[in-house]
Image 1 (cartoon, rainbow, N blue to C red):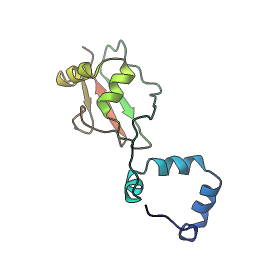
Image 2: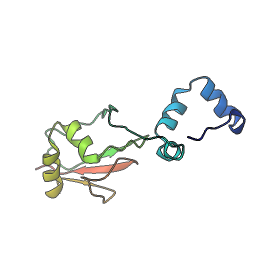
Image 3: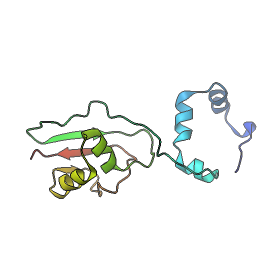
Image 4: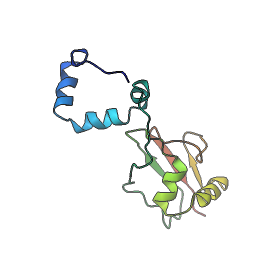
Length: 125
C-alpha cells in the first residue's frame, strides 16, 4: 500500500482531513480510482442506501425520474430499482423487456452500475 505524506497535501485538504471533514471523507471513501491505486480491495456490499421522493405506484401516465448519485459504489440499477420499488429483479427485467422502464443513457438497465446523473422513463402498463 502506498501512503501520502502530509506535506504532499494542500493546506486546505490537510486541514479537512485533520478535522474529520465528513464531505471529504465520503469523497475519498467512494473514490474507486484512488482506493484501487492505493492497493485497497473495495467491498461496497454492506452499504445501505435510500431513494428519497421515489414513488411510482399507481402511475397513470408516462413519468420521468431524475436520479442523481453523488458517489459510485458498484450498485446495479436493476438492484436499486427492485429494492426501491419493492419488486423482484425478475420483475424489473420484465418491465425493461416490455419497455416500461427505459433510461436516458441508453444503457442495459440490468447491468448498469449507477455512477452518474440520468433520467429513468416509466410507462404505465
